[in-house]
Image 1: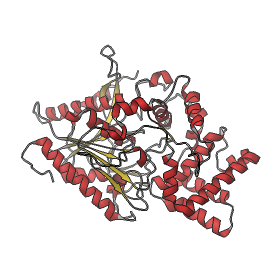
Image 2 (image 1 turned 45 degrees about the horizontal axis):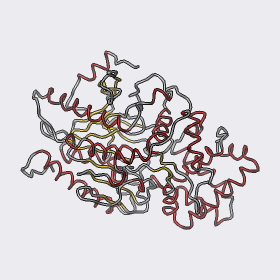
Image 3 (image 1 turned 45 degrees about the vertical axis):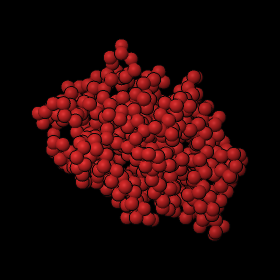
Image 4 (image 1 turned 30 degrees about the vertical axis):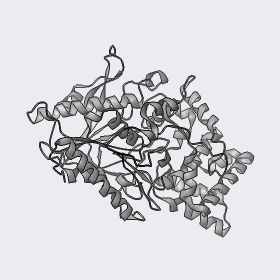
Length: 488
């Protein structure tokens, strides 16, 4: 178990009200591509630490580990401004992002604080990631981390300004998996937050997630979809005759398992639609088709130039041999997220039985074999238990805002219908994908402040953002007092 150093303990006691750095950052992407954003801006990158409980569900286990967090207080209205808790997800957290949440913080006079998810980045409890050591990696443990941290941070703030037993109004935010955590935190700890925003929040665990591929087809449109399907068929034929040369042409010679190779190719297409760049893949393929060029060659160029090049994916993260590596590294997020996939939520992106874009080799058996091969026997996603515990899309919470982009293949695992005190908004435009309300268009590369000017319908984004601000203003006011005082 890692111990906190004297320097780390010093960060915990250092509580400053002003922080000025504005620097570039990058996030190491998990293989599933749930939460990747490329080079962008952070408001603050100064690491802070506190000691977190390892196992929240045992009164006899008192082990702790150092958990990393960040804060940005330039917008904070002392002493009663709200505190915005931005939940870290399935990747390394490197600071406070300067996205639309920062715009909201300035509007509401809020402090921004963000906690890195246990096991990811530097918040690792163990020195190796063998399967036995991952037993405390779960959404349930992560939610308790947030609750404990929330209390710790509130107490620290009170001490700093010389007061006791005073609570600021809190609001929690998250996108994708951390969007689900945001909704679940409000569900499980409603007394600790005035409300939550679940941007592209995947609250429904799904065993065979065929809707993912189906949405890619809808987002691509009939012409591009048909060409992507033809390209997949041509690749399957070439793989059967000269697989080694074909994989090498994609710089994927190390992907010995054909399922790994086809998963890699499927993700390469999906990423364009998920993050608001449909023309990156459709335009060159449509042009190649019309001019009679080789579609496989055209797709190979797209994959190497954009997916591996501009987007920066590490092809090793598709190799099951690499996923078995238990040493902590910059790419550990991939193994960690696959563990959560294989134990809690599945989201197996299998090929639909008909009209599929991805290869039929990416099926249920491929995913189950991966889980067993990478983590050992006895690993199986408890999808029914997860949905029973949280409610899936029937989540019985309150004061939770759900938002989704119309082109995002993950939206079918989110709550897309409004219910009392839980509004759900769909942002509809040609390049509105994953977390468009927070990141603008396209969602990658990063856009300062989540500017929506490049969305095909900026007004669609602006309307949803106004709804978000209105709900937040109401709920924060109700949480703070009964006077109906507006925060903006």
